Length: 112
Image (cartoon, rainbow, N blue to C red; front, side, top):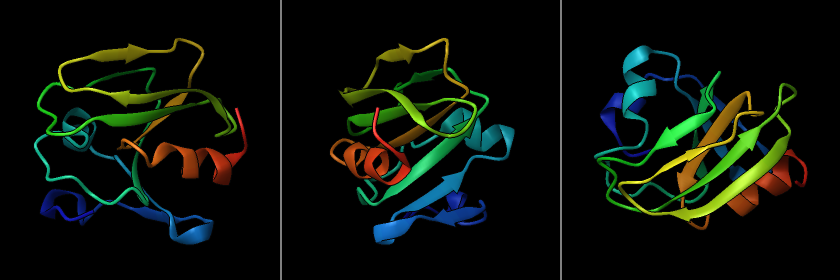
């Protein structure tokens, strides 16, 4: 992701050139992708232990992929616009990616 604040986060590479950055610090979790220029749709931010995401401070819409305890997709929200909130209580983590990128991550992790 083209942002200095995310450069130090751990990254996991999935098939097809997909990259998942793990928000491992409280600051990274709080900020998420807010206030960034739009990253590529082949990049996502993982918020472990998260069931709810806000898009306050976002400059672009997000695809959210809610994951179960085995990191399998259980729900997706496509194109969530700025200044919104999405929650899925059964989730154990969430992937944030720019709108249009979520489909590739669902395919890579297994279908809904």
